[in-house]
Image (tube, rainbow over all chains, first blue to last red; front, side, top):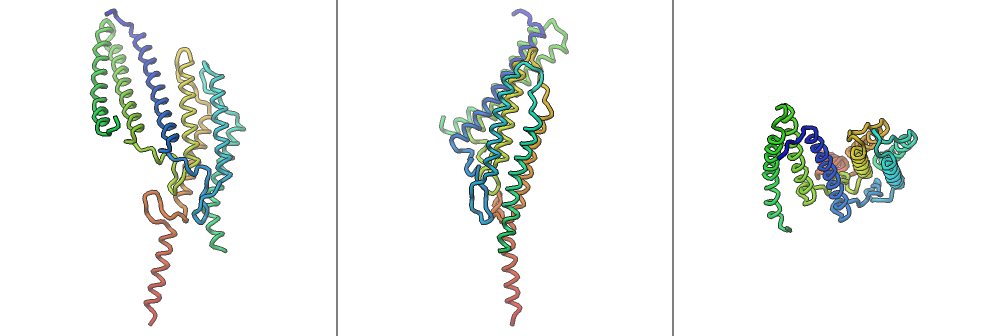
Length: 125
Length: 174
């Protein structure tokens, strides 16, 4: 066997580590997506909120958060593909981050309302 | 392969295979780098051994997740039942950022870990904070009938206390 330079041994190690890491992330994503697809990880009621009386009803706050999440994630992936080869992840516009914060605030406010305010209003009736 | 016991037997051999491969890597690197500085050889050997062990550890985790030994069924569930939007969002953002970092490392020459802008950290921070606050709201919910671990909550306890007081009052009356 011919001697292997230490630098190439380390370069090979880095490539193997990258392959192993990539395979692991892909495997984990595949398992989670598969379990969501077959219903083992339940997403039932993702767009429903619990009313004061325990009933589930459609929540617009959740829908807007879902749409916002998917749009931001897709837009960011597109940006990553157009930034390949650079030494930094693409950044997000401040406006998008602020809008996401606002969207989250609406979702939390809706949740807090249905959990705290609605029972109080029901009791006042 | 459908029998869980046979799969368990198969998984039990994974650490043994990992250790054998690690040993093989040590031998190969040791003899191939025999003319190098001992510290340099040790660095390369430790790198390969850690990689092999981590890879097989990750493999076992993935198999356990896929088989259901590590239960993911409540990954997106809220304690009161139903799926949690904040958990779902955190899951999506985590995968998107993980893929993005992986793609940036692969595409950079020479390969290196990319800088992560403050906006991305803020995005993940907002998402994780929402999950935490949402969990707090859920935990302090007075209207739930049951919590995740099956204990009765405030509403039920309040009814029980009121009932006890009424019974006592009735008992006090002549």
